[in-house]
Image (tube, rainbow, N blue to C red):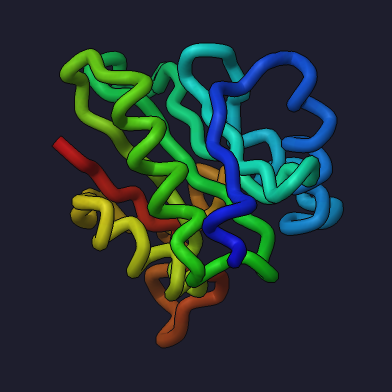
Length: 157
């Protein structure tokens, strides 16, 4: 029944509050995770269940790697594993295409997100510890355990 009520459409400014609400509901007060996503017309699609925005997919400029674009798919937990993310991803690929590689990043603890990325054609590119301190890696390498989840970056050509 949900598939009949689900509608995927291009993002417009009227969707911004709904997208921000989805990010807030998923990431809480984690401003870094909320700020990861860029919402722009022509590069974002949204999923609406009746009139409620339940997810979105987007691509945006990757300033660290100009030959690639960042990408992300976000779906409220209640609607995951029901095909919503896949429909968003397919709609995004149909809407946007310019031949550049796509990258996405997530925490190693996001097992379902990692499986979804692999299903969408991504493969692992790099692993990094989440730290902004230039000396931290030297110190962390001495510990026999991982003190923080690893940030995984995946690439899709």
